[in-house]
Image (tube, rainbow, N blue to C red; front, side, top):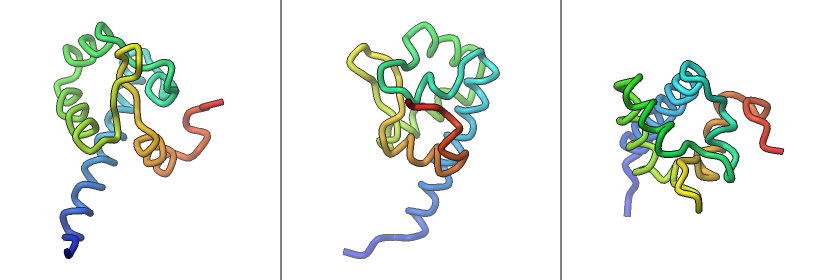
Length: 101
């Protein structure tokens, strides 16, 4: 089975664009990257609602991240990045972009 590299590259670009947007949107709405990179933290329902109201592009980015399995919900029902999502984020912004210790 052949892999369509143009499709894979498009998904990577879309994910990276969404991660970049998410980082900016979090900052502009009073959050930090650790909010979504630390598995026991995350964005609760109220914070997600605030982001949807304040930024029209949030909903699209959230959907892209979830569909690509770069984001999910933790045991408390909070929105977080998966290990793959964190790896992409750190690849883009550097390991020190969010302190996961």
